[in-house]
Image (cartoon, rainbow, N blue to C red):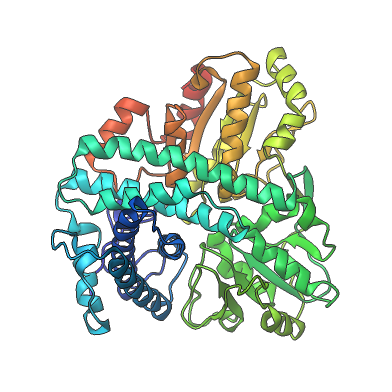
Length: 548
């Protein structure tokens, strides 16, 4: 069976995975995800029409963000679970059609098709990325589509913390309606991409409000990277509601909680760090999990994307649990909350009690917690350092990490930066340099970690605040350079958000997205100054000589 996917940075040969996903996604899983997105677009069309007559479905709002999140890179590899979601979407679509009372045969195929399970895979092959023949239209549609996937991830995390914004649901569904159009033009899609960035800023602000409202503003924190003597549970992904409930249910049980990769910032929030059995961050970035999980010894809980399917001989295969949008064939899935009750983590807790404590793979601490409120508290000190010349430049090195050897560039870049520069980071890209002894400038650490990719909003807010403090009219006049590593669709919505905010001359690596056609790439280069990376020495010289 064939597939086609080019939504992530590691896509095969930089052009697209056609036989097997580099991420580990099989053709069957890739295609059923395409069908799920096809169904979600149909749901969006109907719900968009129902909204015009005041009958929009909240169930449809939630289904769409679920479907988009499930199809994000490295989130869900469970064919049966995704197929079940397709069936749920088809039933929902039929209900919405009945509510609308539409029999118009000019509706898109996304609305009209209602095949049974025996037809799923044949249909899936016809509704994927390559359904759009024009390369430039396809490129721009997918740029918007991937931005919407990233938006859905942020909206889902906010939803789990009881924060929603109807404007975000409305825009997402309107944008999906536009993507179904076969007559849409490049001239219409470019502003739609920028509008996606506008709502990207809005959804990131919503999530920031949800996180800080429930858990407090992140604080400067020294995070242990060693181990304790108790058995433990390792939690990965991005959902802070999940780790809160896991901490509550493990308190007093003798089971310790460790974070992995993007869950590291949980240690920065006052209402999470108060739990004494939140022991440490264990291991490195998501792609290193095959080694980290072998030595951890206890069960692992995936709350969202960043799953690497384990090899057949992996000792931890039977210790993996998933929840939320995450899924893995053979893993135990923790059910969703019902009637306001927390998720039930009793099974994973009982397994942990039977396991050996984690093996120590490193020791010491790493420092983080520099989200916008904390940086604002240091604003006077930072401004004085800039005015005195102690800090010459800030480098936003946010984004993603990955397996490609070329990503060593970011470690080398951080090490080679002049001592009068400061790195602003968020996302797992930080694992390329957050354990390096880069020192400080007058007590200001040279690596300021704002948190997860979910926390990239902080970096934008910090930049806008500095623009205000220095009385500048243009954000591009700040001594801030953007050298960003990307991997998946949350990085796409962050990029579109930065473009909407007017940030130009963003350098993106280690490779430019494979889904950008030559013509679309040219538009981004000429209008927004998007560029790739070359080598450390030349790039640092270029960045230090000009504000670009």
